[in-house]
Image 1 (cartoon, one colour):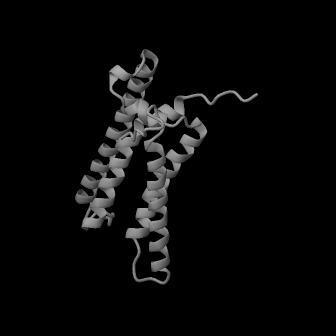
Image 2 (tube, rainbow, N blue to C red):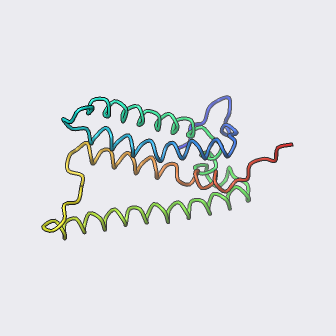
Length: 163
């Protein structure tokens, strides 16, 4: 998902280090925020944990919004005709890696759910049971799928040399 602004149709030129930090924030704040938000129970401090989890989710969504207008996201989502040969080769390499990682994560998740069913009588493992749990997983996987190719592009790009 790339947001094209009228001022910066080619995306905002973002330093790779900043982009990497935003991707780290997105990929850590969202799951941790969901765990705190959905894991809140009747224990003391549950309301504070829930609010802190919500703040973390909002922080992850802000990182996503900033990244949506970046040149990395543009390169990852632009049609082939709008990219030069170098950008196209970089994008295809990043998309291949992103697909491999995403498919691997989905496979690990499915194996976990199947093992949970097979070992239910011996081991108590967590699994999504409520609509909120499934919703958090869905939106997390969607954020990952939309941004993972751009994250690989940001990680592969060398920062400009400082003088």
